Length: 343
Image (cartoon, rainbow, N blue to C red; front, top):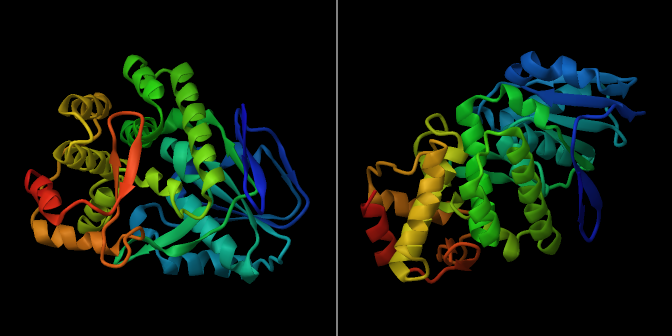
């Protein structure tokens, strides 16, 4: 299965299939972490036909998604004398993909990279669309660049070793796509078990097609693409408050989806029954839907560090029922605070 994404300055294929042999006649650095290296590096190397290849292994976890790790990747590239025609391969989950893409955008003002995502979350969302970056003390992904990959190679085989919790975190992003863009897809998700191989392949395909369609219309997130941050405005605050070591990204998004839906119900653009359907689908895969907010005002103030906020107005992505959404900066502080107090 191949999904093509066409943008003003480039186009590339997203391939969903067993990995084929990749022949590259240039210097290549594979960026991965110890977990993926131990599980799958031999499998990857057996599918690479590259004369000059090296591997840089960086620490595993969102807490290492910072500029020092980018420096470590770049230092490896300089030590191995990569040039402007060289290439990086991101081999791992969303953290690896984001940092590899960002390092590729910086090295000698930009070199090519390929995404080979190994987690469900990165396969259905993070690997597609060219968003790269790192976190800092002010928030998530606040330092970065748009840098599109040359190709995305999605091999469902990698999911066979994915822990259940990581698998569920990826499902949160699939639910996000369906709630925002497809009522039919959401109904399909309600009636199919995603732990079955044939079903998860369909879900990956539908999610990738949705993401590609959105990005092709709005590469730099001037409008429509911001809708893909449904659940993220709240979720990023949760990740920041818990120092990125309590919840997986998809888990924080799951909670954020519930907060966003409560806001939608509050302002009358979603019914309680629709909100419950979304929550029940998340619960089906043990995705958390509750969070204990310690300081409501402080939580609210964190919204202003969100990249989508502008001129002291907070942009929220809210579901309009199931299958549609809207981006708005007109939700009153009173309504948001009221929702946050319920948590």
